[in-house]
Length: 180
Image (cartoon, rainbow, N blue to C red; front, side, top):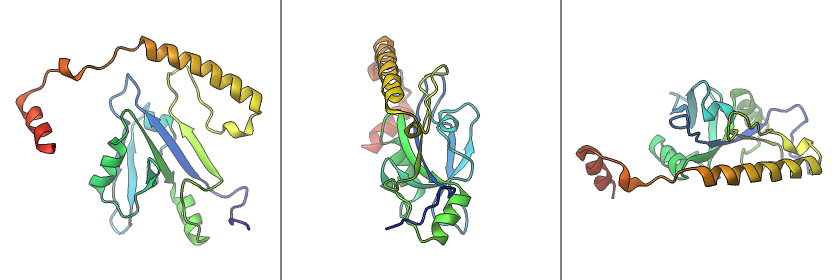
C-alpha cells in the first residue's frame, strides 16, 4: 500500500533541539496565527540551537516530544517543550509541506517513513549530519563511536548545576511556591 509520498514530495522535519552552554534558551518564539489552527514558530534567533536544528520561521508544530499538540493551547505547548530538561523534539512542517499533506489527506505524525531528522550540533566544531541514513552503516557506526567518546568526556568535564547555590529574590521564590 502506498502512502502517497513521492521522492520529491515535501517532508516533515523532526527537530531535536539541544540547549547550548553559550546560548540562553532554545532561540525561537512560539505563536498562534489568527484564522489558522495550531501553534507556529515565530522568530528564530540567528546562531540559536533552534536554527541549528532546522526550525524555520512559519513552521507549524505537529508534535512536541512525540505528543500531538493539535488540541493544545499555547500554555500547554510551552509546558510540553519545557518538560524535557535542556532539550526538546519538535515535529514541524513548513507551509509547502503542510499544504501537500493536507491536499493528499496524509496525517502527519512522527511515524511517517520520510521524516527528515535534524539535531542541534553539540559544539560549534561538531556537525551532526541530518540525513545519516544515506551514508553507509560503517561510517555511521564510526562517527557515533567517536562522538560518543567526545560526549562522555564533555559530560565528565562539565560542572553540575546545584540549585541550592543559586541566589533567588523573594518574588522568584514566591512564584515557585505558587506553582506547587
